[in-house]
Length: 333
Image (cartoon, one colour):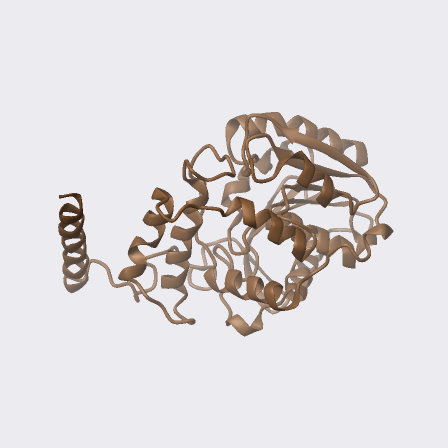
């Protein structure tokens, strides 16, 4: 009986989908129907042009104050879920947000154009765009993949950064990242969130240059981490504008084929970092935090209680994190 009801529901949903397309209500190939427009498509969005691309970006706080560059996760997410960090601007920091190349509302590029080195160069270009003087201090605040990117930037340019807040990076080596992903993405085949995510994959297919369709589908996959059966312990769905499917696929394939190690030069960076992990992410834990952060010379380890992986996005996690993050930055400011 349940199987019959599911089959009938499937036919009804498919019929509604086809009907809506025939009436012109939704054409998946039409720009703007599935996902928001990028900065190249909507000139009203705040953006900067750096390093041969156009990035969705904005900054808050006094322009000549110490820079705090906020680096989102993914690869392929956007900075909307990190906008609580605007609160640092009220404390006198120049807080910079940007969607990485091919991510969020930033410009899309072909899959073969991406590299980790290019993402590092983009971060450097963002910093230079917002700096108003040579002696202006620069701090990085990275979350998840963003914390990995921040560490790779420090590994390449240790003298350019005055401090960093790193929130649950998967790992700074390929082995560490695989170890974490084996736990954090351990979903059951009958997981409700996973089933929801793959459902529309039966009806929407996209080629590599059909970014709207692929980004929409990738957004569904990303929602799996918000399910009740996910080990990462988030409180609920994250706010976001648009996912970047192609950059995510490109960077994961590069990591899988070439591996990576972002720790080869970290001994040159002797400033204390603030390394943050969460109480409710059962896939992470204190031991993984210690293993990953040990690549740095001087580490302040902090657990955000009553929060999961996205501890900066929800009220309880943010309220527990912010005083510690502010104190760390003020000590180095």
